[in-house]
Image (cartoon, rainbow, N blue to C red; front, side, top):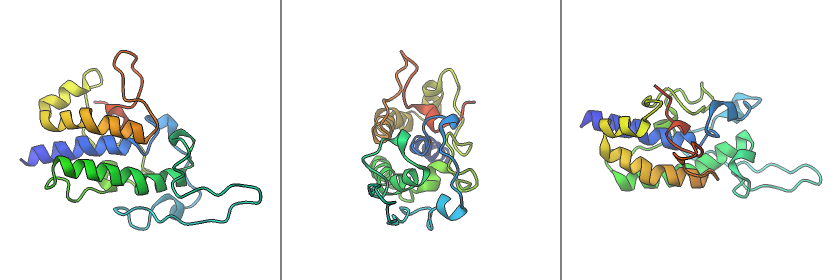
Length: 184
């Protein structure tokens, strides 16, 4: 049971975590200029959406910039969006899948306890590394139930929330396992 929960946590958190990144480390947002802007006050809660006065002539943007595509969001907008929208959706999905295993679902579930030190980077070494050639097959051998949940629900939902297409094996494009999990 412990191994199943560990795998479930690793697999599930990795897909959710991918959402904070743009699918690869090369697409990470620039680091914020100060530590306070980089991390929410309470990592397991949604980041506070601070209203700031727009510059003269600029339009104000809602917290998390829901109308702005993920790839175009600033680091702060990504943090807000993850806390306000993505975390809420993933927590709901994970708890619906297994209430007991994911009752404590929070940012660290996917990003790891060192999320502040790694600037929320995804993929993250805190998740189970997967075989570079056959990630789904490896994960299925480890835990078939959680892998099916990840492939059938988490990946498509995460891709949608991040304005991406789910991974397509035929083209090798889209959001998939390695948006969150490191390659073995």
